[in-house]
Amino acid sequence: MFVVDSPIGRLGVLVEDDVVVGVRFGARPGPEAAHPVAEQLRAYFAGELTDFTVPVETRGGSEFERAVWAEIARIPYGEMLTYGAIATVLGDPGAARAVGTACNRNPVPVIVPCHRVVGAGGKMVGFGGGLERKRRLLELEARVALTRAWG
Image (cartoon, rainbow, N blue to C red; front, side, top):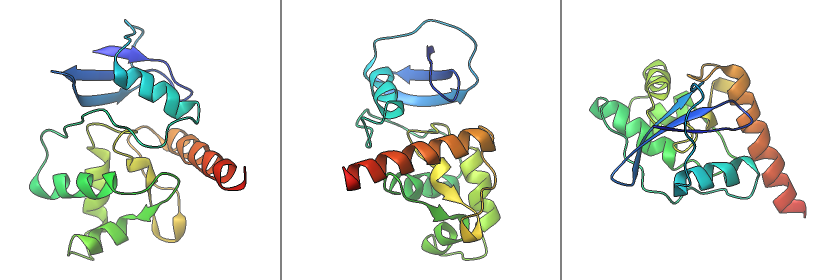
């Protein structure tokens, strides 16, 4: 595991065979790497990257959780979906809480953008990295999206 410093704190990044398999919030100080994922994370936080291209694998989880993570990965940069909307897309409109649990178990947050999932009416609820990190990630994406749209 190596560490990437970011505006939301240190991120521990686990790469196996050049595939990103884990991102952890609040990593202890450790070695930094010149790996492509570190470069892409830095570019993301600088507002220069909106789509990660590094190979990612979401290991573990139930079939439902993997389906949630796949759906989250489709949410465009700067946009949000509700837990209920994802539950509906997956065929179980009553599973909003289960979607929230799956988001909390996302093994590669930021890259698989569970921060883009919000409560009904856009309410800021739940995030494995804490609501302050979620708010900062959403603000970063909104600011970059507006800047790109309006020049």
